[in-house]
Amino acid sequence: MGLQGPNTSEWFRRADAALVNGVSSGFRYWGPDDTFVIQRGNGAWVEDMDGNRYVDYQLGFGPVILGHAHPAVSSAVAEAAASGTTFAMTSAREIEAAEVFKQAVPWVDRLRFTNTGTEATMHAIRLARAVTGRELVLKFEGSYHGAHDYVLFSTAGSPAGAMGSRRSPVPYQTSSGIPEAIRSLIRTLPFNDLEAVERLFARDGDRVACVIVEPIMGNFFGLTPDDGYLAGLRRICDQHGAILIFDEVKTGFRIALGGAQEWSGVTPDLATFAKSMGNGFPVAAVAGREQVVGAWAEGGVMQAGTYSGNGLSAAATTATIRELLGGEPLATVNRTGTVLMDGIRGIFADRGLAGHVLGHPSMFGIFVGEKAPRDFRDVAGHDSDLYSRIVMGMIGRGFLPCDDALEPWFVSAAHGDSEVAATLTAFDESLVEALG
Image 1 (tube, helix red, strand yellow):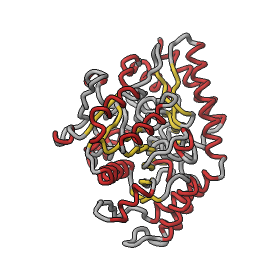
Image 2 (image 1 turned 90 degrees about the vertical axis):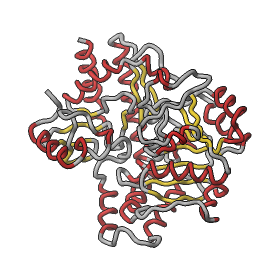
Image 3 (image 1 turned 180 degrees about the vertical axis):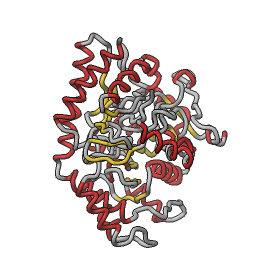
Image 4 (image 1 turned 60 degrees about the vertical axis):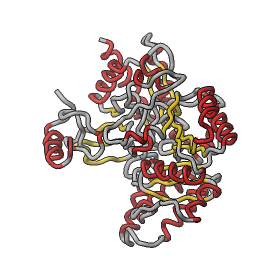
């Protein structure tokens, strides 16, 4: 028996007749009997077409930082909608959004808005290539930087055993339809291995345009970098004239108001933001130092988008960041996430099961295995079947993390003490049930 009730099943039948697999993003498809159809969300909860309510730990894959249907954001968007949505010129709301962005992320000199994280990383890489006059891009195994051809190699959906040796990794192509020539422009390395980065730059440093890195691995258990790792990347890029890009599509406005720069103390040349910046509305940005982003003003480097900086997204951005600037939402997220992480660790210990809770309180992952991972190749030590059984037990009890452990649990400011206590009870019961 699947996860769909009768009304949800009927709605999915309609979806499948009109949308490929009934979804507009492949990550949403759980199969013909288990794919959800949601009718509303409020605070920490979502509700399916049968009226079943779930405490939501997916939060749209991370964007919802304040909670679903947050009143301040909804009100700002409704007001913007009544004033016109998209113009062929810069709008006042777009300017206000950029100003409040810079207030929250003070290392940024200037930025441009776009619509999705995929667009943002694509534009950032193009900009880095234009500024440096180089073509190679270095990314790390298990990282996901969007769905464009530049970066769909060795992502978290790749088999860990297909990436070659640690000393000479093979970029694993994640999708059909990517021209083979692009593989020659990408280099992949294990995360948390500065020696490997040093070796690559010793060989190809004069050809590397940029290093793009998720400061916390948003599609691999929320894995955090070793002490000094991000600072090491900064040092190597400086030595070789490469651009350091922080992909903050997931971490931005979530792990700290100022994102990974505030959290780590390391300043990149460029950063990409999306998701939590608009509390679920489609907005993204490429932001950075003037000596890099200023190349757009000089001309000759293409960046455009009909809907970039549109009124609805700009209004959502301004309202969301203003709420975050007050301090309490992220303090609540950190407090709530810490209780969840510590509670799950305690449950593993009480039940005598080897498990590790990784990441940041706002986005953490659960690794079921003896040895905590340091890079994507360690995924082989994770018991994915047991984890999936635990999650299915939780869904049956009204809690909704992703059934793939590589995708972190996300916490919003709307998750309160009652949701946390009930979540830990459900996790414990589901674990016992899964162990049989």
